[in-house]
Image (cartoon, rainbow, N blue to C red):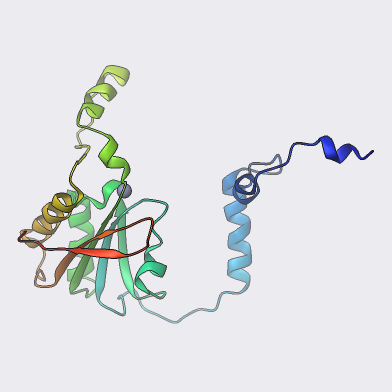
Length: 187
Ligand SMILES: [Zn+2]
């Protein structure tokens, strides 16, 4: 009888993320980069996005922005954080994107079943209780994703630092169908 039959089967997810004893997940990513670089050819691009667009999106792992929007290498700036919230730091990136690197359009992508819908601003108070210091940032939790997109569009449109606010559009990505739904800023 083969002893290997008694070895617990490793799940596909475990195989993919490299949780075996031969390295951490970061080791796996670095190894993947070696393969990537082996086939990499210098595309000869400068830093200005070809489509002159900046995409602000949630960091959600189920949202593959380039595939979902048909984007190629070099096409756009992607700015991501928890919720795709338009924070001061996102305005910083958009300002550099428009004023120094030539982008003209902004696309906002939030999505269904976002982790921020499960939080409240109490998260900050709980942090303060635990570590003795309240973070300076807002959690930016929300209950209505459509309204959250509208608020983000409004923050972009009203920023005094952004010279190009005519083409600002907001969407909700459905993580189960892959479809974008556009949000009417005036609704
Ligand atoms: Zn999210």
